[in-house]
Image (cartoon, rainbow over all chains, first blue to last red; front, side, top):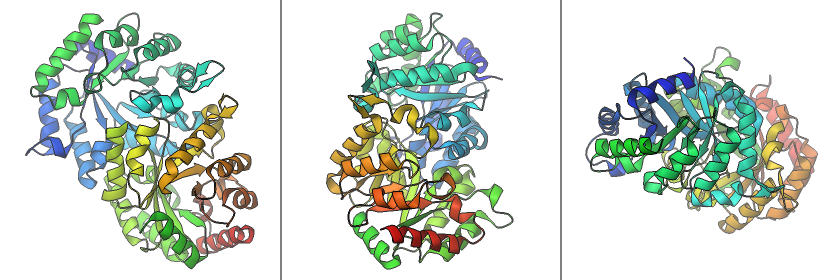
Length: 256
Length: 256
């Protein structure tokens, strides 16, 4: 099944654009194991989300145990929910191919995040997986995103050049963009460049402070679709993860 | 021991700026195991190199087995040789910290490669490890490096802006730059910006076709130091890895 079809089905079934970030951190989970923690979050939210995003840094920091945790968490996620491995990988062509194999085949995820700094030959090996989706960092949610992403060439910021490339690369509807909810104006601009077919992965809601109304208004397409809205810490470390997820899912739907 | 001191000692001892890239690929090594392959390369070259670089894509593609291989290879490398984990990691601040912990503590390497697209808050957690070295992608060796890295703002290419930031970040002599040998003019320009104290990691010699004379002339500082010259495929898959490493080490020294 193609990524867009799988996404569309689960968005319809769970009436949700919400992605929960399973960024498990041993320092914050008390006495349960990381796998127990992840399973509990999945149990509590699996009817409320379209996707889970696993940021690989939180798994890699646990060493070999983290790799097993990554595999076991992936296995535990219901088959109809999108799995995004957020590793922001990037390398030259022949090496990028190894990362693509690792993420899409060895770990069998539905989507990845990748970094565009090395240009098209580092992106292509990911896009060769036509049934998967590759979200390319465009305008990130952090405050120092401006250091390089806002530098202007011919009156266009770097992130605009990146968005224009993503538009070119998206001939197969499998090149998406990562755009932070913390920058609504940039989000609006990037959606306009990419058009309605591109899928946006939008972090920055919740702990990072992005505004839900503007995020949905500017980030979804004209049909209120093709956006995956991520919250990690704001849900998994809240006192009542299910209620937090339901509240955010419903708030997102209010503005769609 | 600080990174620059460890590097200086091994450069002196082995009279070498050569780094061998242990990019082991099951499809290319015949009937030996990847660990046997790596051990053989290390045995044959450990008196000829200053560093080994392990590109993490080649390990990750092997799954959990690859993680064990990474650990076992790291353990096998003599303690006085620099270990560079080439993962080109990047994320927002609190997550970048997890990657830094993973690479510098869990895997205990001496140096890493990181991607600058997210700006300073994604770089700082790596630079907080003051005895380690973080090589920041500046002008990469691949042909599509030009897609974004050459975009010009105020007559300065993006890679020049990145080099100027690296110069600012290098107050503790632990922020280096990755610059491809395949672009000698850019290499010259970046060395001029960074000055003599910065350490450059220079891939692109060998299989990628970079010129050794120009690489050494432009890449080292005025004392013929502070450059680590990497070759991977050109050495590890040659018929006689020791002879190929010795030849390249000696050629590098001829131009220092």
